[in-house]
Image (tube, rainbow, N blue to C red; front, side, top):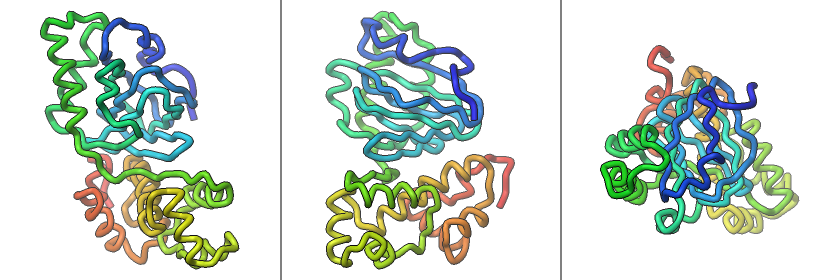
Length: 265
């Protein structure tokens, strides 16, 4: 595991005080690079042009595979883990532009237009001409971020201490066949109390959360080149086919779509 500066040595903290509402940053990171918990005074739209990024906050975990990005509101403490060699194209957004965007972290779809705008923004000087072409690029970029559809790739963490411990443990060793009865018994609760507590704490049913947790673990493993079969069986699915069916239903593509092109099942 490697810690420290990115290959391009561009620290987002250096751009916090730039007198522009939007600042584009491009960085290259080596495999398994991690950014320790930090926060920004501006909101951050984090997109991996190559590789996968996994973002963790005290409230939950978000994974952005190819053609997805994570929106992180201003002031949100977060850490970032890179899966594979990662090339990021992100933007820091402040002022009224940031206030108009979502107030919670989310994963969104990156359209071809938004992807090209992110690449262009990373090449724009920090103190660009707001009334010129660069200013127009940044304005359109913020508008496209605001229109980008959110997708269900979130694993919220409960505040209830015992339940949170159980949830974090599940992410370490996820099992798709875990049941409500198993969890309620482990927490010394009856089924009804457990289901009410789980939904109140996470905003999801147990089945929905379990599925999202399995996806959040599967996506980085797919990106690192592991086989669909190995991942499906490790997660406790009866067969790779059952895992692939769930995957397509949620993300609209087969698991193989998220593996390196050179890989195969």
